[in-house]
Image (cartoon, rainbow, N blue to C red; front, side):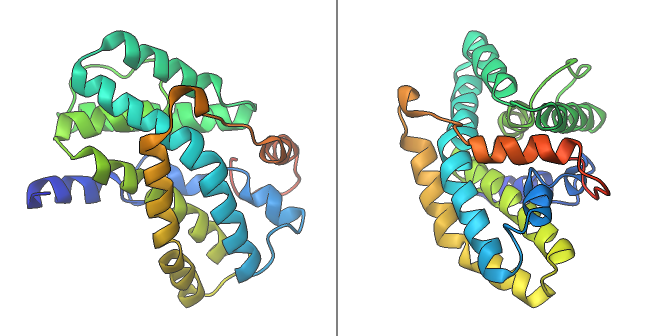
Length: 220
């Protein structure tokens, strides 16, 4: 991976990217409220399980397919996997999250002159990030790892602020996730289409509870 591609990837996978990632917890706030996540050990268990049961088996593989479809200029495949991404969000707030962040990323790409044109009315974050990766010429394996790491980093930041964990404990947790992220990326690259799954009823229930939770800090 050359320096230019690495720098582009670091910029667009950064939590400082102005697309609103910091305002979402993806169900974690509801898990905190329910007492499922309460300390460093339970935070690590939550993140690892979410990583392998959801990110590695659905979001990651779907993103990988979007990357390959973009590379092949297969508009039908891009549309199909983009629709799958939106359809898989089974609560209102999870759908709103991916649509808002996808829209914001696509708009940012247009404003920066990376990808011309107005953003679509509805596009998931994985679809928008795949578009960015294709336009910036970032290698696919590194882009997949960056997507997974960006998700993990956001989960850890929520834990640091809300468990609460100390800053050092948060970084220790993120460091411990490195081999898990490598395993998840390998799974995402190698799963067959009929093995993809976003079956996570517990997460769906937590998300629905979060939609009516009192005193929320996060939007999901």
